[in-house]
Length: 417
Ligand SMILES: Cc1cc2nc3c(=O)[nH]c(=O)nc-3n(C[C@H](O)[C@H](O)[C@H](O)COP(=O)(O)OP(=O)(O)OC[C@H]3O[C@@H](n4cnc5c(N)ncnc54)[C@H](O)[C@@H]3O)c2cc1C
Image 1 (cartoon, rainbow, N blue to C red):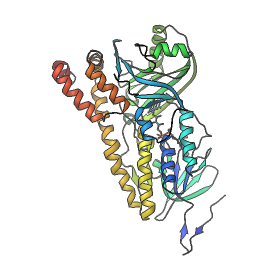
Image 2: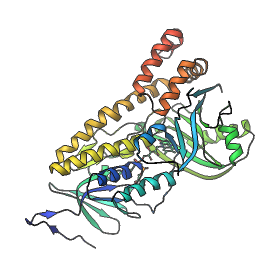
Image 3: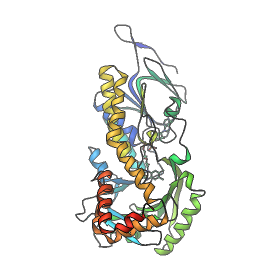
Image 4: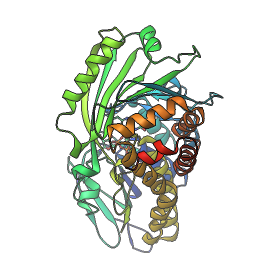
């Protein structure tokens, strides 16, 4: 079916929507919800039938609950009070906030993303799933989106929230794709072990009623393997910068075999999926009548691989700029989004990139820093605060560097040699 040209009372052509958002992950649903709440007429499209699953470890920083103004208790799987990092030699450092102010939770992505989508629909968004966007055409007055089944929808603005392989970004020439040194590959598997084993493996050693995220360093030069607790399932996996790894599955299986032996279990892998995530932001986030948010914009923490907080935050900032652009009938208002992202997201991601560069520089650096977190309480408290998102990364880095220079000057300097 083609589209019908509508005109207003003065005879000007009208678009079908103020905004079309392509992709209903955390970035797209948040953009759509906030834009609809601001009174905009929003269409949200996703190629998958919903609820859909997504390869992800499902670790959610505490900061996410602060960004979202609704209750997440219906989707939370485990309360997380900190992380345990394992050095290449197997040394374990627990970084747990002493006041147990909750650093985060784990979720199943199909449930979490579906909740965010329902909130967007409740706010007035029109949603179509199983609707793949294949073509986008921009003129000076509007932007049109063509779907696989031949429908054409028009809007004043389009938001690319369609993940790392963003069709919106490619069609509108933001970029042509993610090169290997700008992306990580990841493998995620779910293992059914039962509730008791989840607690045994990930529970706080003190017996406090919360679990830890386990991160293992050393298997890969620029990445890590992980074990995140869900109710009865463990999410295990591996990630590494794409240009630094040949066979992620082989590395993952090496680690997983050792891991099963260490914790004396033979869990059944119930799903296994590979995916990529970007580790450097796109050069441009706003262009003409379009914005990129979340993974499509490359907004992922290069050190940890987390992108859900950034997806949500960029969605909130995008909706603010879209509202202004619609009110002023001026696409130039979208530039505000780029500036907001610069000060609130990109500056943080830059710190994370430099942390990753230093930490992954050598196995020796990974060992030195993990040992420092194990032996120095002040350092492990800072890490616990940073993973919850309570402190900006720049502040954590500055405090940590100054502290290490003071108490372990030789080790601190050796990180740069
Ligand atoms: C293995 C793995 C583990 C991870 N673990 C964590 C973690 O523990 N914590 C964390 O914070 N982050 C994690 N991340 C990163 C996180 O998953 C992403 O940063 C986050 O999902 C980004 O959200 P998004 O909305 O931008 O994109 P996505 O969640 O990727 O959503 C994009 C949506 O766009 C749709 N789409 C794509 N193309 C089209 C099209 N042409 N037309 C219509 N729809 C389209 C897709 O179907 C999809 O629903 C992990 C990533 C991976 C790969």
